[in-house]
Image (cartoon, rainbow, N blue to C red):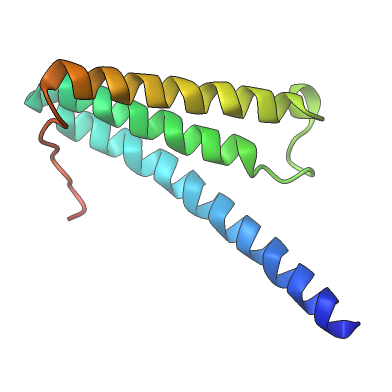
Length: 109
């Protein structure tokens, strides 16, 4: 059953890699927020939604060793789910208010 152990190891590695990318995405969304403030409130709100989405992914994929204190058990999943819903609501409001997605200044593109 070495095959099942190998598959389990790959899935755990993928989860940690995705979590690390979400942490980098959180930092990048803060930089994009600063870059998009001059374009208007719609672009800034879209970057706030991106930040909330990255925070939700970080909370949902947070390793157990790092989830100490108030984030132990199912509370991190509840908080991550609520943050995800707030991110979707903010993006929906931006989409409806701007008549589509606003132009964004993508510093990294």
